Image 1 (cartoon, helix red, strand yellow):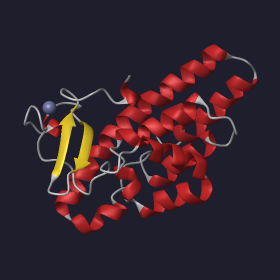
Image 2 (image 1 turned 135 degrees about the vertical axis):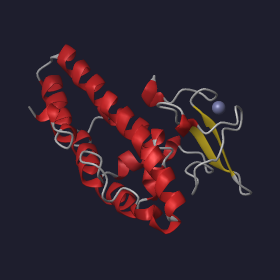
Image 3 (image 1 turned 45 degrees about the vertical axis):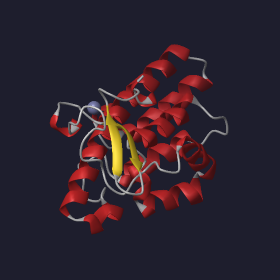
Length: 187
Ligand SMILES: [Zn+2]
């Protein structure tokens, strides 16, 4: 079953979701959407950590930080999922979930030129929706070192993550999942 394959899910979910909506099977569409959001949450958390680790190790690799990652998380799979979700003209809850996903990576995924180029060329309306969510200071080059409020690094906690990160011009600031507002993807 395609759902069991990490890299096939991004393809299977939008296809099943759109078929379920087309045939009026609202319960199935809701189920697929929820399933997709769960995978997105886990993936966004991993992307935050990968960004942190790769930038720490070699800042110059920032633009390729999603190269050679585990199956199901690479750019090709993510771009395919977004492409399929955006195939219908209507702005669906599935597309909205993908916008929330980009935000849940603290917009760090946009620092990959290949990804941003794909958004520009293939799904520009979707990209506009992502940019609408951004504050000019969002998507800083580095991850914050410690949460502005609790002074902890959330990556040292199980499933800890950033919910806000800004470039202050004189440094990077952010709030962790225990101190800041819950990310839309996690609601
Ligand atoms: Zn905190």
